[in-house]
Length: 459
Ligand SMILES: C[S@@+](CC[C@H](N)C(=O)[O-])C[C@H]1O[C@@H](n2cnc3c(N)ncnc32)[C@H](O)[C@@H]1O
Image 1 (cartoon, rainbow, N blue to C red):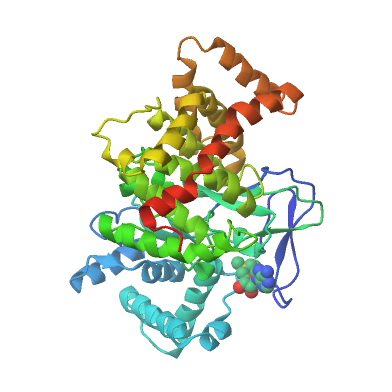
Image 2: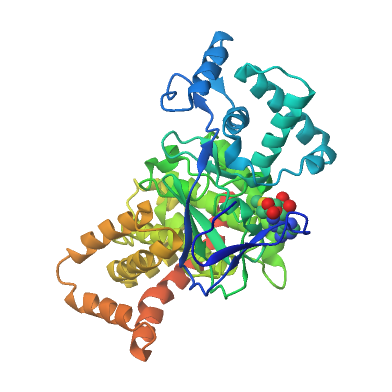
């Protein structure tokens, strides 16, 4: 019997077309936490020598068998299944749709069967029709109900299962989303949720850790890319990981060409894939090269022309990340130098007129004030996007401290504080439009030229 947190109730039956679902019994404000759930972390494929303490005793025997066969590694789905079979109570009430898996694709069913056999083998259990059926059911349950996520300790993919969260149904227009904080999963309202309204998350939203069965590709958080802009780029994309510079360029040229139909149509569709992903990859590419100016104009475009359409809530995690990214890049591009030295090859590859245009905007804008406002927005929205424990929240706080320590900014600081106190006041809006939004829009206008310049011009 599931006992849900205050404000939520379980409705429906597993026989209903959508099965059971979670319904709000009171109003939740946008960004408000609906629940914090502890869950079982399954899988997390790992090197056995690295982390085997602290688990279920029976798992030690599994590790011994794996090692005895000359392996030091158990793939995530098999380890997850081993753990699921050892803790059946965690998944007793969730759906498995075994029939659906059997009917789905040959490969999915063959993988599921193979994983079930491997798990039984390493558990030392006999493989007969009954044990195989049990293992297959547990595997299906894990695939239907687990969140696919990275393990922050080891940086590898694992699964997260919580019986409450497993009851949340999918919507392409969700009213809630899940964020992971250490071992907890936090369910936030994405917009206002009314009493008696069903709580729904998107299983396919790229920014939240997705339910595993719907996740074909993920953005991931591979920290190894973080050498350039203090580990912030990896929060965006990892699809170029492992490629050398020339292959990255080639992949981006292909991606940029694939984007052209979306740009050249009468109604440009900037939030439609592959454009957002290609632009994200391009920021990683430019960032790795130290070409922060190009990365900046793309990030400004994403923040103004893409993210607000992909995620309407201003506290949506990707939007908060985008704001911090712009602030970081601005601090890497200041002060603007109208005559870049010959040594700044990456800047010169932009071409004289493009560089001239961007540097003119950088030269006339008040970069410290823009940074300060963006960082204040990050600090304001981060708790609703995630929590105050979010690395982005702390990074923004640290940068804000640096800005506040700057000398001779009393007037600018007062304007920022006035805006924060009353963002809808006429003068304050004007300040935001002219000092912050204006330059960001101007920088975003160079995005396509920057892309054309590096990845091929318009046909
Ligand atoms: C994580 S479970 C959600 C809880 C589930 N309804 C139950 O009763 O256990 C995912 C399963 O719920 C059902 N489901 C979730 N969202 C749905 C939707 N929008 N339309 C139809 N079925 C949905 C599908 O059967 C899916 O495999």
